[in-house]
Image 1: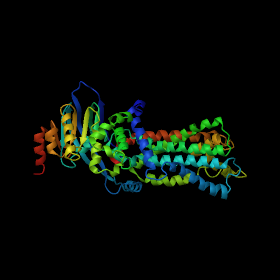
Image 2 (image 1 turned 180 degrees about the vertical axis):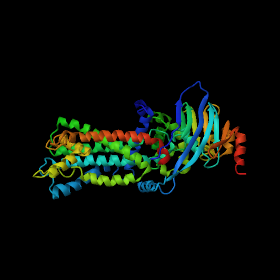
Image 3 (image 1 turned 45 degrees about the vertical axis):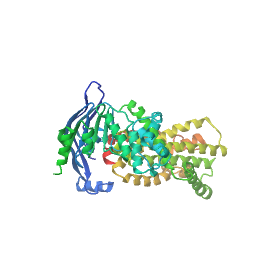
Image 4 (image 1 turned 60 degrees about the horizontal axis):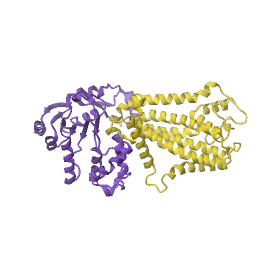
Length: 259
Length: 275
């Protein structure tokens, strides 16, 4: 058994406090199995031979920042720079290894659209299941049901099994449920730009409506979206913050990574 | 984590919705649907009855032996379904665990709830069989849920403990399958305990009977039979053995449940990374 350190993730509710998220000295590394350490037999032999059976992969390497209420923050960086891990730590899915994370208010994460969607269930059943994962009761979902279906433009398909939906239809349904969630802080991972042009317009309107009113953290590779929606952006590289500032500057710095 | 947070509204909603989904999906796409929840244990009973009661003449001296046997197989099916689903739950629901933050025990509990619902349906069948076979209705039937609760606590404890280990070492699922095969014969389901004691009770045979009855599953099965079917059932309490033999089942159940829950809670912080 490997002993692992655990940092702190605190949840507070202080309406007069203007800081929505405070991250200080955050570290996170994963233990990756080296050879086939997946199973009791290998674990046993590795112990006998004195092999650790895993190596440490540093993913977040000392990150500190603060996000004020009402900020729309874009987090950018290349694949493997630690964006998603940071988001998962903010969302409470992963535990911080060192350092601390303080969340002021109710945080609603969307690491992926349509979490828990089951292809064998109908569209209707999936709405209720997905809603439960967002914390909505059956009654609350019933009240929002018509609106969700109308927004997704899927009225005739609700009693069909999800496996018969096209991928675009699935994402539209998931997105329509996701935007019902009410929280003080929204955390979104690559959920922009789904569906066809008409649906994108709806999404666009939704994100416009969030600007300035809601604290949002958005992970994306689209610099166009960063410049369009964000009030501030953070560039990550190898688990460290390399730049923190206006979306325009960050977009330029991001594109320079490949020069 | 205090009690209020464990049972807060959000967690209750999630538990309910996941249980519903589990139950719906279990028999999805089969023509007979939910009927399989009834048919599977009944068919298993039919086979065992044919082989052991009709051909090998087990249980001739036990009144209402078919109901007696059915009670045993029903409880065994519950234990086997509950633990195997519970142990696998974290892996089966890996997609949720990697992407949403919620108390992980909900996944395990919802998987075991499906087994509880199936047990409730099957117990109705047992009662119908009992009435058809001329078993008299008695106040002692009201004690049955107490023993089922005990069996459920044991199943839940095992699910927590082995389910947490299973996240890292998937071998657990296979080991448990084999163990269950052995366990089935270590419990007096098809054979009456009187067969173990035999005609002339020797020391070794008495010890075997004591060990069998010290198993919490045997204790529950025998107690349910005693209260539901026939008072001629030999139970852990009525069997002549020292008091320490009699308290082993309850000690085992409590220990497994507490250890399982604590270990699960400790490990659950890392499930999202490992599953």
